[in-house]
Length: 298
Image (cartoon, rainbow, N blue to C red; front, side, top):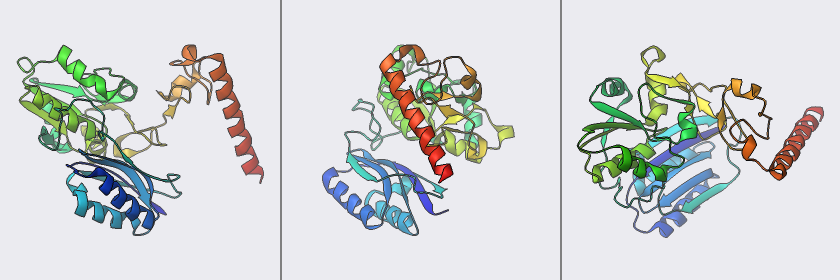
């Protein structure tokens, strides 16, 4: 493989984000790194790629500056350049929740390893909550978990306020794709008086990588934010597709629906699209088909 990809996050206090942005950007540019890194007063989050020793070198620097290895760093590989350019951006939060009391640099819930997770969520006294959004949970979830059906992560606090209480829900276990959202969610719940709050270390992806399928309590596939769309046990790529019209993940059966049109729409969005949007999407799809045909004939 020609390219090494590093997906990382770390909740750590950054007092001078513009200075750190300049330092990180210059270090990445010097090594020909592409991808996106977000910097905020609460930490760093992103996915970057490089060739040769570029990624080991930049991770070593980020370790010196931000101790990223104390957070989560996951590696994968690709034959071709996975990102067009480098972006190092400043944000108010590395994962937007808009709840100032949710501060993982101060406190978080108890980490639970994938090997320990099954026993925890099988405890009848534990309520298990999926902190992801509805289009992600539609692809797969843990057996018996509660799906809050949030559209965006900022709705999670409202769900907690309306549906959970420290008096009733003594033990709460949470999970997300890679660990970042439930880490912040656990900090928020502790601030609201919940005493026993747990979250899956490394997220669903680590669980699918570490836990044998025959022992798994995971049902379905795990939505991911890259070209694979979703993965299964062992992180094998699933057959899911993404609807261009609404970005909703689709299983192979969904493509047989009368409202599915490749590169245009699916049954989730067809009735919400305007005629202008449908026309635009069809033009784009026809151009893509023409380009692929030309490449094959060249």
